[in-house]
Image (cartoon, rainbow, N blue to C red):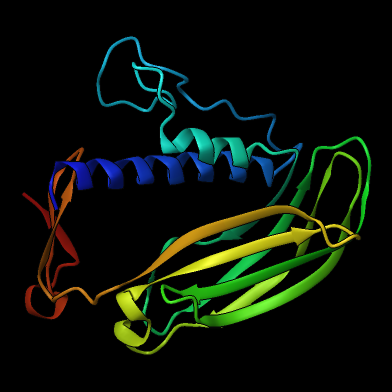
Length: 212
């Protein structure tokens, strides 16, 4: 893992973060007045949150935002991206329709797949979305394996698809999810604002956490 690998991972994290911001606001249509990602381009070469770099090249986040802002978008509302073994994973599937006409007889699918494409859980929903509206199509629930290695690589994907009444695909979406390893009894966690936080075994020290 060198500099190029670090850049690719950083740009993927950037893209996922902006996708989350845009889709979360759109899933709260009319409760949220809108969303405007910062920023479009860069005034000079550097590492920043822009969608387009100084040389005019779109970053991955530009394509993620383009899809997230599509007039018809299938999204998911879930609690977090990183899970613990044995937890119950759940997500609500939401269809956003910004068009001026209603969409009837829609078919939505939600699948959890591992890195080999093996389906871990799936559901299909039938719904309709009125003009300039959103609809909660349904919920997918899955119990994670009891051990972190129960899923190869300890990560999996939520794959969403939406079709119209003529079986033409209107929207698709993918979310990454991971399974974290159990933390040891005494562990250090770096906090970029306050420094270091240490968690101590309360049975031994009578404390929950401390700072230094």
